[in-house]
Length: 400
Length: 72
Image 1 (cartoon, one colour):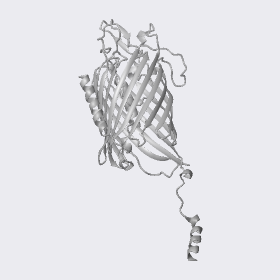
Image 2: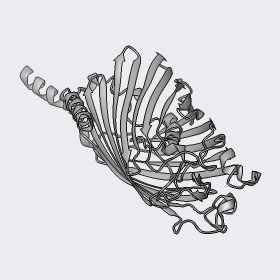
Image 3: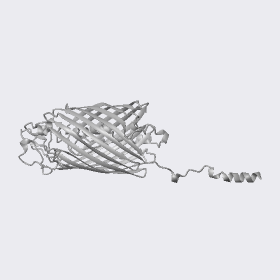
Image 4: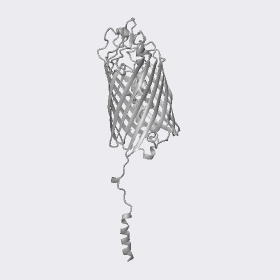
């Protein structure tokens, strides 16, 4: 009799028995993130080897560069929009005219880009982007397409990116009149003839990057870049003064192949110190061979405050097409007095501060981080530059 | 000299890749740190743009958002 009640009672409790997890009916939360990045970059430069005046003359330059980035992302995709302007005050560009004409002294570079990334499964993603930039002396349209893949535990990843830039180097575009009459502009005393038959420059970049986690504290990155350029690779308003006292504009081959390879090792060495070391090599068909060694150290003073001292050495064997002021022979086929293509060494270094407070995260938009980074640069031909970048990060996270 | 340099670089890469391991989730605390990201930080974007203009070379892995000459 007792056994009968026990069996009936047991069956009556079945509805209250714990159930196994039903993964098919699992609730999912979709998170949408919007990041707004307010960027301001400031650049001050001084030197005395301007290519506009044939390798002599001031290179004084100031750039004020505000920009805005907006990134909207979901677990499946992200859309990034970027726009900004560089307000350029250039003493060397002012010397294109023999008379100091303040009209060319202040210039603007305006740029904008739109990039879309789509995740395919959990291990693959594809991306594409379009953009443009224009300044008084060029108009550039850029496009890119790429994909990346990673293994299940994200210890190894591969990314491949193809980029194309189509530049028109005719002068005349400015804010409010970007479709105005366009011509290649030569130094004022050399406008008696057309020096070049083309006004376009096309660049094709192939970038391949591999990331590999080596162990619990080290990550290695290998990056390679192949760039092919064709078209007008010289700058029309760069003067050349030959040894026989004649004058011309810069002339360079109409094709250039650039090869770059970089190795980056990020190491969480101890406690709160992270070392990021980069070694990169480069060579191109103009005869430039270069090596750069760079270190950036992140020191976490507190979880919310990071100091980032950085140092970089760069050495370059110059192009055979380069010679200083009045050193070129007028019978040479190609010639430039642009010191960016000369044999040189550069040392640069500075300090960055990143502040990332954890507060106000219950608001619709919250202040996520602030960073400021200063770099001083000195080149072996006495060109000096100060670079400051500041960024305010604002974020919004919505869960559905 | 170049051949020796190339061999040394290849040797270093092979040596580093020898220690590749698959980490368990609880072992990823350091490699997942935001400062350990391999890509270029936004703070370095403008600085690298300056390098591409003021130097003959291009830094691999740098971001370049537009064409143009930067001839000033």
